[in-house]
Image 1 (cartoon, one colour):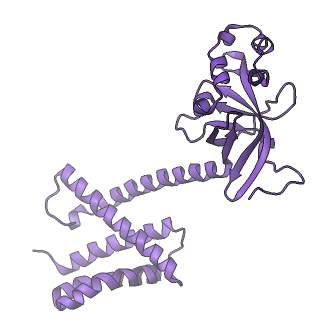
Image 2 (image 1 turned 90 degrees about the vertical axis):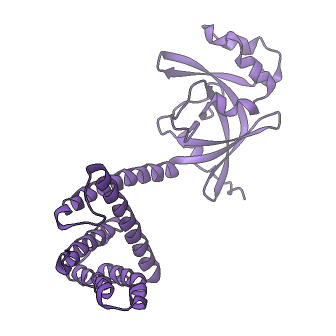
Image 3 (image 1 turned 180 degrees about the horizontal axis):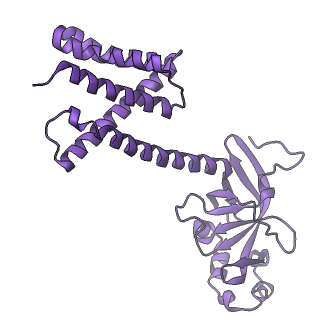
Length: 297
C-alpha cells in the first residue's frame, strides 16, 4: 500500500532539489517562499492523477512544469523562462537516469522512489554537482582559448596556402636574427603539404647534425632557400636551431577582425598541443594591428 502523503512528500523533495539545482546552474537566487510555491504547484499533477479527468492530467503535465519554473525563478521574459524550463527538464531526465542506473546497480526494488530510498537524492546531487564542475571547467578552458587563439593564413611562394590555428604566446620573444621580424612558431607537419618543394627537400638534409647549419643556406644557390633563416631557441635539450621561412604577409583573424603582418615562421618537428587545439604560437606583436592600416575586409 502506498500512502498519498508519502507520494506527495517524495515528489515535493525531488521537485525542490531540481529547482534549487536549476537556479544554481543559471546563477539565480531562489527565495524560500517562491520555492515552496513552486513545489506546491508541482503536487497538483499527483492530485489530478487520483481525482481528475484524463484531459486535465495531460494538460497539467505540460503547464505545471512551466508554472513551477516561472514561480521559483521569478522569470520575467520568455527567453529566461524557456532557458529555465530547458535546464529543469534536462536535470529531471538526468536525475531519473542516474536513479535507475543506481537502482539496477544496487538492486533497489520497485520502479519508483520510495521513502526508504530518499538517500539516493544526495547521491544524485553529488553526481550532478561533480558533472557540473567538470563541465564548467571545460567551458572556462574553451572560453580562454577562444580569447587567445587566432586563425592564421600562411601564403607561400608556390601559391599554396595553409589555414592554421595559432595561440598567443606572451613568452614568445623570438625574432628573425637578420631583420628583427617577430617569429611565429609553427608545427612542421601542419604546413608540410603547403611548403615549396625546395624547402621540403631542404628540411630532409642533415642540417640538424651540423654545429653551424647556416652553411646549408649560404652554400645554396636556390633563391627560395636563400630567403630562409635559422633561429636560435632554447629547447628541452638545451639550445637548438629552428629553420625559419620569411613570409612577406600573413593574415591573422579573430572574429570579424582581420589584419596582416610580416612574419618569419619557425618550424618545429614536435606538436605544440596534445589535443590539437592549436598548431602555432604567435608573438605578442602579431596581435597588434599595424599602425595606420585599416582592417582587411
